[in-house]
Length: 126
View 1 (cartoon, rainbow, N blue to C red):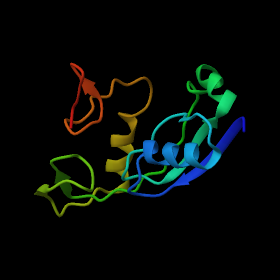
View 2 (cartoon, rainbow, N blue to C red):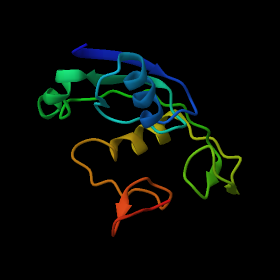
View 3 (cartoon, rainbow, N blue to C red):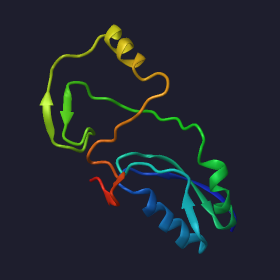
């Protein structure tokens, strides 16, 4: 088969886990067009067979995410899976949220957390 498969990745599975399953099902080479954190669920587009040659044309696209927040907690991993390191019972009001969101508009440089899968000197940061 040559083409694309959209898989609804569940929480817990890695993008690589899903690719292995797709390779097994179709008995073809396959690869994902982006990644989702194991703690995230969502649509994971996978190219199969000759469609894998289209990666360069498809990977630099706008992506959209929906997130849920818990206010008043900080963890050592900066996600919901880490150990809580700080709690604060204060909830932001609408004005506080509006002001904070303005800092996320425009071009940004993101610093990944120390538990990131990003490679540093050839070793995964986590």
